[in-house]
Image (cartoon, rainbow, N blue to C red; front, side):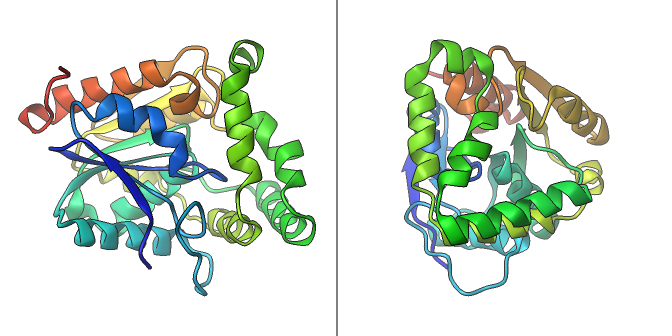
Length: 264
């Protein structure tokens, strides 16, 4: 599986994995804003954007192995790996399966616990609805929770952009990813075993992965740093990109020292 990838900048490699049901297009502001301090690598996870889905059974581990192969293709031994929402789940799977390839971890608007039964059932319901009827269920049920109230009230263009990305998600990939996420294991043990710096970012208005979930993740990790992004919902990197970028750049500078360049 070869992932379609957008990259910018040079130096310290930082892989950012996108949210469900978006693509690497969501990281536009990060490729622009962080490329002065590091090499930003943003793949489309399998089935989304320019990456094909393949015939494998749904699995976050498989998605993590895709990312490891991407590093091989790029000639990268170790990288900072991060993700938002679903991308965070894949990042935690990557930490489990390829710990020797991780320099640092960024987890944004995600959670380490498993889905309770009702949430798993809802993922399966949405998977079936998308396959049967198309993306309308995503627009009516998934989209509203992705964006915080401040963005909805004040940044209509951001909401419109996210809606377009949601509408363009391929039904097969949506169903596959929902089933992969529903089957994910508990990752608190993974966080507890991390031997690299960890940055946890959460939008102040995130209802899907609220700040309480982020706080629990930070407590579980030996070196967990928590940053709350004001006036942002679940897609903090899209809703408040300047604040998100500044938080990540500071983490790279202070925790990974000389590996990251200063902005300029």
